[in-house]
Length: 344
Ligand SMILES: *Cc1c(COP(=O)(O)O)cnc(C)c1O
Image (cartoon, rainbow, N blue to C red; front, side, top):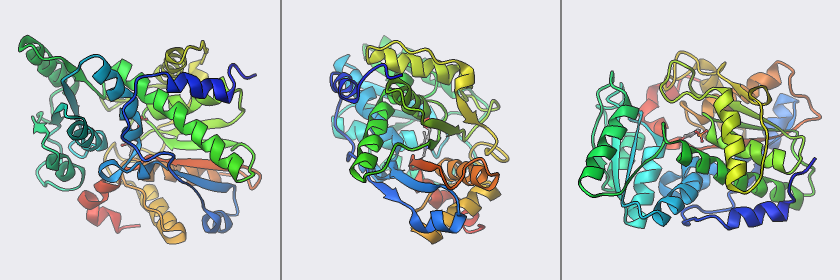
């Protein structure tokens, strides 16, 4: 049962504060050679690796709403900390440069910190202030301490990413927009709704897609493949993804009830750990590259794609299904995982 119509949902989204950063709509590419080879479902890839800003990715779409809200509140400095190969840090540094907002990045001194490559290299090109955090320390706490210090100096900081629940909800709201794009694009192709949408997600991206499908009353199943599990500080369990769905709907003016058991988010494809390449992701990346000429990365989109292939191999998806894989980007990371990337 639909709670809202597509046009109402579009209008609710259009009423929110927003800055323009992304090249939208991103393409929806069919994958005929891959679908044939697998003898499985028809597959389309929603190319959010092509959002345009600083090599693209899902954070650019999300930052349109997160930074739209921040600008509205007079924020003059943004703080983000994560793995040293963070895609969010890269896209935030670029967006901040474009908007003229100061940006402080707090990369964890992890195994990829010393060699300045990939996302870390790109982040540094946009003039962000880099304040590294020791590998054993809490990045979340370091960001909070930094914000307190800036406030004491009379600045108006905003913390983004892990621990910033309002920003994470606005990130989800951005993916309500992505879902509407997918619906439009399939309709223009004369195709019915997808039976499944697969996406690599820690929470927000999945929550937005799922909130949209639920609000529109679509039976489409949203399947999240998590790049991390409860060992990681930034891990969000299904219960908080369900809450993010409800909160994203509420920001748009609608009440939605989502139970944790309504959320399909799998940690089965993490492999050894977050940020460590997995054999299944390497195999999946190589297959996609060789059949469709599309790249995924070893940390995020490659693991998500391995989850989709795993479900096809296990017979959980059949030739009658129609799947959209949302490509969330992450591509600069392939340059800091060069040896691992050739293993597949
Ligand atoms: C951040 C990121 C994700 C996860 O996004 P969420 O909104 O946290 O679900 C997935 N893929 C890539 C490439 C990312 O950078």
